Image 1 (cartoon, rainbow, N blue to C red):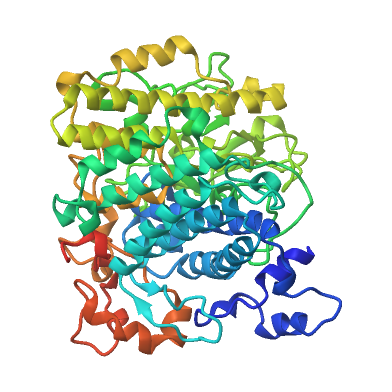
Image 2: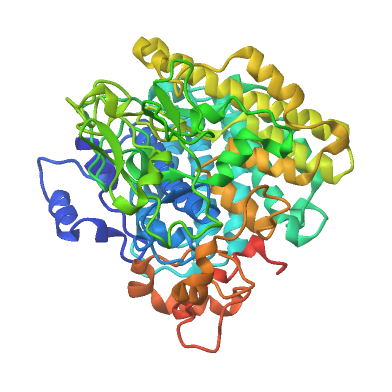
Length: 617
């Protein structure tokens, strides 16, 4: 696509950002009279691509963060996903997240804001400031420090680093600017925001509500700074609540991306994959050997010990087409017609992966079997592999383990709700606003109000899931035969809400944060929350440190005993090409090892807290 090239041309300012593709290729395009340069890209054409790359960066980060947090796991211990699951933190995904933001989005955001300002297209200016805040806050959430003020400055190929506080403060300032510009009337000649807006459907009010929710999200990160005024970068309960009052009031206010399962079309310039489908399908759903953990199973099947299964369990936990036999374990859940069985969760507090489990299942001789003979019992674990009519030419969203296009129906796998090609990306949604409100109110001792917000958040997420399930079944009625796709029954929902989540009298912070975790699976906020509360098992129910950690010397080096994962390893491009500036910021980083020449070479660099995760002013 001509625009995509022209939007990416000239992205220089962060050291090494062109490493994803040959620098010469970009320079050749700049000199090619048959191809447009970046100066030809209109502000209204840039928006959809900036949204695409920013969303990709966030979801890639969410995928990796989820491996650390322990809701999903790969069955291999030696690949990068498996390393993260046992807290051996390497630079996996670091370069990809960095590139998707800086190469795909950051410079284009600046150009979009500049061009939109020239045309008095204030809604594009406001959207640009919100995306800028969203992307750079992601950078400081996972890396801590990053080039920020000079990151996209023309002519600077080795930009200086800025502190986490500087980035955090700048992002909040961008939020305020976004609200200001989105509230203005555009010049009548300016293009309407609806021209190319995949996030907010061209509605400035959707963007404004998202801005207030994101501001509340980020101010709530500051609990380790002590209580005080938000202007002083303190945890300010009243300001958080004020932001939430101007944020979402229901699911109709949600900012989300509706991805599609279709073939052909445009591919992005970094991964050369279709832009239509969900980034988590690319990271997880199209790949074999990802399994749900026992933490997820326990939270969704017996939350709080109330003995009431969450109706979302059937949609989150994968199913396999199967047939009962005399030796089928008694605790396996089957569909009413006995044709589908639901996965069990992999116990990350056990030695299962040390003993070569869970074994990936194979379709052989007309039945599922483990690929390791000694692990025959591992067929109780169903990998989340998703079908894809577009990417794989599958008959439907149900995957065929035997063969994606012509395999027998008996080899079917359902996949999981979040990781299908047409799953939705959640940018800013009502259920998160409810959980933030519940957390803040609970801390203020306003328990009854906190419980109502907590209850509203659970219901909002269930309703949001149900709307997508209904859409899937409406598009393809054959999916109704699989319990992973059928909309949740209102009777079961009401029973769970009334009997399965507790009461105001037994509400705890742990229940609030765990239900938030359940509703925000694969979000970087899950990782942020675990750091805010120091990986406390009493806050994150049915979770604990991975068993394998105690048997992995590399993990012990990466995260020494008594510590926790706090940040990602810096992108290799920065380490290789901007090391002087990276080292120069070290004295301002809380917890950095200043006794070595290159603080990033510290084997335990992943345990250095980012700014908001510390008590540093």
